[in-house]
Length: 167
Image (cartoon, rainbow, N blue to C red; front, side, top):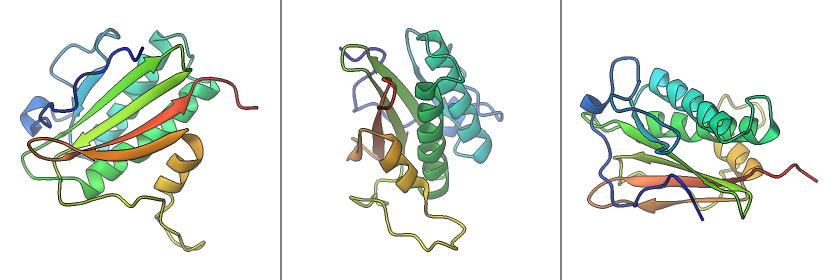
């Protein structure tokens, strides 16, 4: 059973839902691991730190492999949401769900840019390029990942990361 998730038809948050620091205005108890974050680098950094805190609340210390993998995936997905999914007047949202039986953490990052679709696979990158490796990292760290459109606007990019030690 996936805990701490909400339905996919939630509306993306507006920038008014977040403070200038990217901090959510609503409480962020571990029983409700979803929060808006500002569509800015600072907001993406906040979302990554929040995900690590939620992982710790679930019993995965920040230095654990599971927490580090989740932090990297959240960092890449939120950075992409800020860079490629920014729509003026709208923020982004992060959700984490723990499925203890399956040994997975589901990460969902929502933005309001419905017209900007993700590729089905990570794009090839130039070895000397300065960017373009984010989805490659997600592809390596996640058991599976993808995206879904959101109603009435936007998209949700999701990834599932194993909490089990690598073999």
